[in-house]
Length: 501
Image (cartoon, rainbow, N blue to C red; front, side):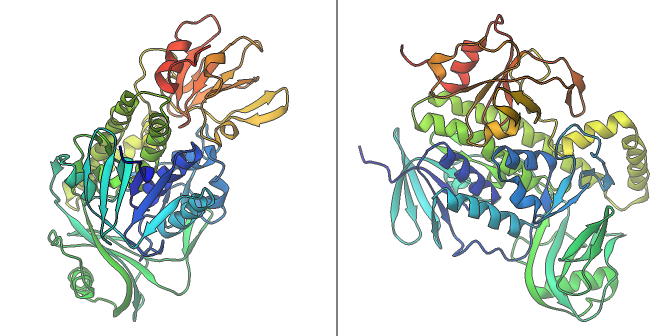
């Protein structure tokens, strides 16, 4: 059997691929990335920020401050252009973060670099074949690599997904928009505009959030988003395409010139039928594409990576059976399916006709009520994600709150316990009540006390548990006390069979 060059090879060094590489490296897995770009530089700004749950995920790894120091905190959750405030939500990060994707990638790449992950830049995957023990991968420079597992994080047009023969069912686009960064000879009216074609906007790339309002810089490149009169072709758009689209809407193109980037997005909505084919897996846009409404794409991809990383690491290291990878699709496919549904609904609600406007006004009134606002805001910010782990305590399958604990060694935040991406059994009852010796090499046992109220976004207050088993992705895998059944089964299911005595 040929020895692999790496345990896991990731294709694509966007946010999803970088986050997955970091997760695997933290777990001690030999991981490498293949990236077609010669550097991490990204033309244009792309996605515009991070939602609350993604900030929590970064906080779980101890790197959230890197992003918070560079971005703009704001209330960014929304549905169909209806703003949804989460400032009263029970999370340390009850806001979103305005931060362009090029900065997000740069900081993730810096973190991955600290973890000594190899990135093969300026290359692409041109083919692969898999067998029972690994995958042989052909690269565009004529070289080949062998890996135990191959993960496609290579975007909506994923070569890995297509070459694996994984179906990508869904819906064709009904609308398209051009998005660009350009210089302009004439100053447009900044902000969001509507007409018979749809929604359009102008805004300086550089901005600040002051008292909840966007304040643009006085000069510099302008970000343009213009809805096209008809669905555009799949070819790469040009400056002329942008000019014609602007003239159709505004009667002028404002003298656009010197573009940094021009791209087209649509409301095409598709999802991979399977997130895994034996030793090939998909994450991020390679697994699901949808309209950018709500800014959910990048965030969903990063959270895919955090769900997959620890599971794949345990399988690679032989700690858990390969069947653990089945839970990746089982848990993440429904989450993205819901994103597809809410983005399709949002696109339908932003149609410019008067009947749709009446429906949008009705939805705005509905979402102004407390209960609907909380439910939709939790959904759009990722704070209500719930994996179906069976019946039980409301915490089961949900994100573990970042509580301020009291321990024998002093105060401690829950998220601090997850910095090294290892599972934690948090005992909040009598110290010494649990013996997990057969899993002690994999699971940290922490005795602590918490006297506050337990509260979950959208659900509200829940009964304080005596103990919780927290997975490396921050989701709760078991709730009970020292007399409750099921802890050995949960430990075995998620973290492998007990070590021999």
